[in-house]
Image (tube, rainbow, N blue to C red; front, side, top):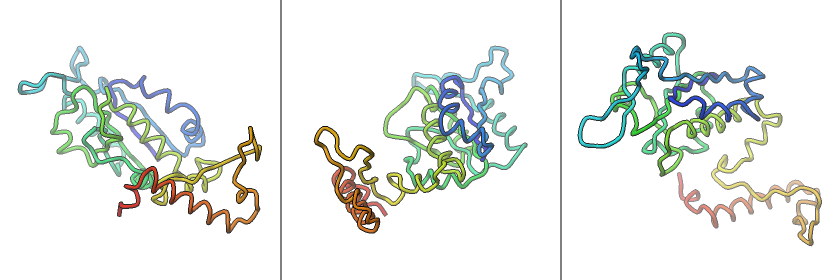
Length: 226
């Protein structure tokens, strides 16, 4: 998998992409992640990538020219499955969407900034718009980091135990059941006896019951989703 990220603040996203699971995935050559500074795609001597919006609204808008040049350059080198724009008014990000993206070979992520991008970018260059929540960030870099992290861990071979990802919350539409580790008793607080029984069939039944109960109590909306 290859992920190209276009941003005006690459330093904001460098650290999350160079540690832990994502770092190991890149070392294994399972994933290639490239950061591209949008200012490298402008011919303006001041490397300007934003301008005032038409109309009375305050705030700066990312210009269409450098974004177009960047995307066209990348597309001339390889075919992309998705060109994503991070935006608060995009499609809500879910585990289902992360699963889908993890099956793709090449992805571009354009990080929004300021008041957003010239809308012609969204109309003509973007294939999918993604929101990580109903709130506004200073830029889309943190959203891009979240998308990359959630997708990369699903790529085959990235996790040492691939079944681990399959038991995460939301994979089956439910929250994950409680998990415990040693010691079996601490400060008078005991691990549920069923988990110590060695009866895997009953343990799986208990885990499913707990997952359903937690989902019903904490996220009942998930039980109503199709």
